[in-house]
Image (cartoon, rainbow, N blue to C red):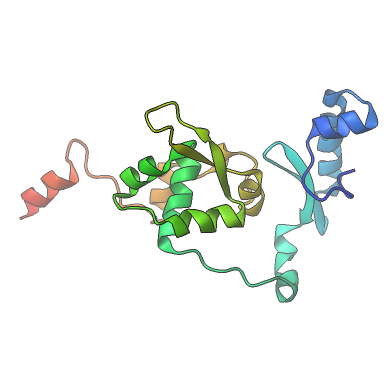
Length: 179
């Protein structure tokens, strides 16, 4: 069923199809994943759903046959990160975190890629639309779960965030003491 499916499948989908307990299906998927590990194609779980994908160390071989991905704008990357780390999140909350207005085109691009989706409306005045990541986001970024996103310490270690200020000193206080 995993081979024939157009999209990643959940253990409960498989259990309904083969009339087996979900726990048995989960065990079988884990066993199959271990058996397929180290091969050119691997069985992996992404967001609670299972699929076969090319092993990471062989992906470069498929580069000529793949479409060249478009680079996301900085605004789109920032918006995607905010949605991933704060979901469900409204447009106003994204703008508040980014400190600038979000263009409708930015959200449209992320919706078109299938990485974010509308996730209902907030129970507040105006009932703003909320956004959340999709299973495709997990698959495309190689994450099993949103909890696999890097934490602040990991982002600082890679140089993607400014180092933390010395204990007890805010960046504003540091500027005044250096000035």
